[in-house]
Image 1: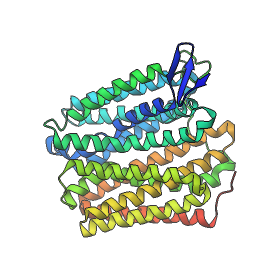
Image 2: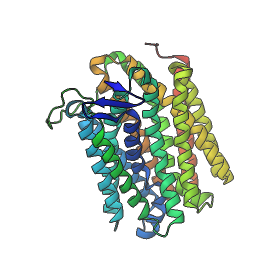
Image 3: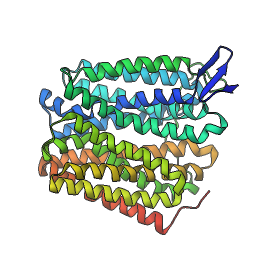
Image 4: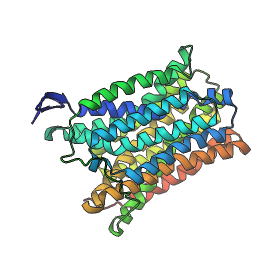
Length: 402
């Protein structure tokens, strides 16, 4: 029986509910963006190009995609708590790689482990937050899952940027703090009630692959195009924006850099919270429009060498990404038949995480020939065209309401 706000009563008494699961989710996701403001320090210490920064970042997205495809549905069988604990173990191992860092191999290992943690958390933590809510709390639990995901991603660079700027151990203390938070998250997870009725004991994984039913392809095309463009913006801010701030805008304060990255995820959370009020069909083209405006401001910030314009670009772009992403996910989920919904949503996330990785690697490659500023302008122009096309398509041919 469920009692109290966000708490569950079992035979052993009150146990943590959906808010506690959201805290675990946020801590795990914060670890995935913790290195963002630190890449410049690693470049100075190890010595590698801007292209390598984006390749290290892309390793994270590749790991997320692989885990989603191979074991994205594993918590449905083995239970939420064991998968959450595995995700926390991977997050701790990732922090250990950065603490022991002595070159690029451990950086790659840390990002791959971090991506594995994010892939496990995406499904298991979201499901746990929703399932631990009472019937009257479903809407709040949905927003809690969104806020934990995007808010956690934003808090990672905010925390590491502050600690790196104002502590004597810039490459050590952020990860020690995160290990402490992961320990807390493990304790909370241990106390969470299991929401899977009859969990199996470590069954063999059954990879779900990528599947899009024929009747969903029309909605999927316009929704995934918008998601790709929005995640490309997130990839830009989590991989390359710190270099923009330092090399183009002359901002050397890591706390400021972390705050800029935090702002895009904060705006994304706000955008996702507005999608339900606006409605999914109008929110998709509206979000794409805001995304275009944000990218235009980012490009203007590089031309004018203006930090305020970059922050405005983060806010507008993040708001647009949040609006379009939640609208796209809702439309795809509603259009998919129940028997194929899991595979369809997984395919949608594969497209989204491709957007967060491939374009930023392109920025890194272009930067070796054109310079970082011009590469950023080319990126902004290409993604503006993509987001504009997705928004126009969604406005002229809105997907059916289901």
